[in-house]
Length: 108
Image (cartoon, rainbow, N blue to C red; front, side, top):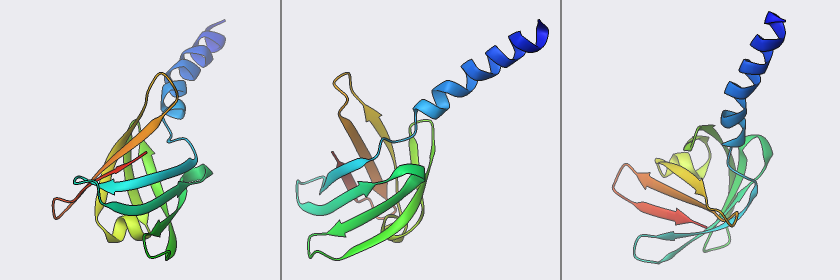
């Protein structure tokens, strides 16, 4: 009985972390002043592609812990962006990134 209870507690503790991984999708990214920066396409397992306004595309990988998103490689890392994401009641996900130089980026 105790192993069953321990397993149930472990599942309950792990479930919120698993549910917090950013959902795959295509997100339009803009700067804090509304300038179009490009398109972020998030795939499963943290893989992503970023296409800038010139149509150039590069890929990388992000890590997620809770609602935090940290680029491990690729153009988001090159721009030194780190951020958070949230999903509202309607299922719409928004990313908010901040760069080392103060750049603010929102992707929806």
